[in-house]
Image 1 (tube, rainbow, N blue to C red):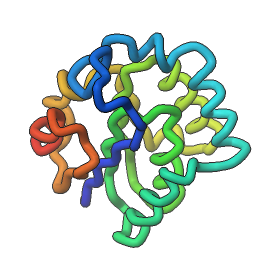
Image 2 (cartoon, one colour):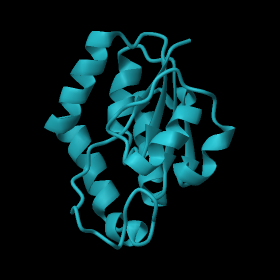
Image 3 (tube, rainbow, N blue to C red):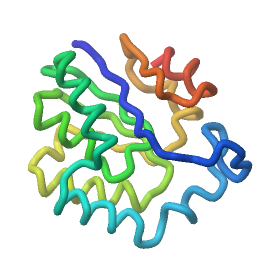
Image 4 (cartoon, helix red, strand yellow):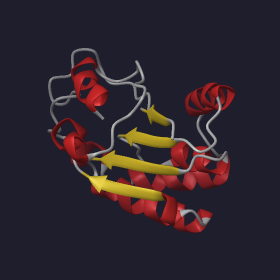
Length: 152
């Protein structure tokens, strides 16, 4: 089975010291509250954001049928939900912010594909060792996470 690794493109300030790929300080506070619910509502109404659609189109052109997806920092899961609709076999997602996981579970259930996803409330850079190996790794991963991704 082919495996795909998918990472969201989120614009973080270049000089941010409160959070980066290796530190989770402030993430629950920054992305908690109403943000996950608002993003889920936006996905229901408008579909994927433009930046995610371009990634999805690229992956679709490469063929995703039967693939397994590792989605790190998946937010509400909109990208991998769309990939599942295109024929991806299964998804393993890592998310640090628990309210995102709850919204992703609701969206997966609404889409009827809850059994194809496994969500982990964990920092991938700390919990990657018990995940199946991947055959490829995306270059959009923060540089400190790439060694861990290659071990996936």
